[in-house]
Length: 113
Length: 113
Image (cartoon, rainbow over the protein chains, first blue to last red):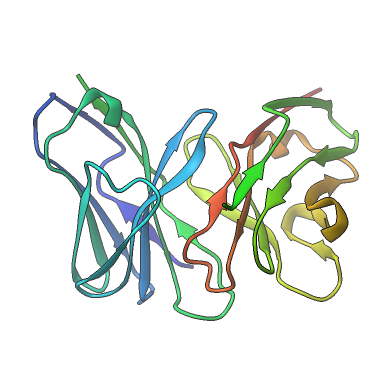
């Protein structure tokens, strides 16, 4: 079974802090994703990566950056956290090409105070 | 612009009753459609997907969905709901590469005994 692991289940950070959310997958998937989940808005794509060091903006990239130095790891970075970034963050991975599903981690609930 | 509408925020059904969750989409090209389920505290899991062919698709856990191009709909159904089906359900649309899915806002299903 594919496993996508997000390093923290809950995080509380202060406004202005630099925040790192880490995600690791164990199935050698080329594609990895960061989504933000908010009630009433569903999931919105922040960034995705289709290879090491490659990234592409999603629908809401403002205020975020990403890093993919190794195939199995995809990090989401909030350079200067703000209260409007309080949310649930979901990481996902999938194999490149074909019709394979997204495999999701269990999420990191970030609170910015 | 592509979008997904799930008109029902909450649905409550009795255990053993039938279920239909509605999904309408707007997409400029051939849509590839998905239903995901999220149990409390978990990431999302793929229930089923439609790419082409038979418009009635079967998924896991006894779910099925029907693609109706004329109505731009992809409704999810189950003939008999079990208490373990209580979760949030997301409809999504995207291109074949599956990399930039657009998710609906979700429908929370409650099952009463």
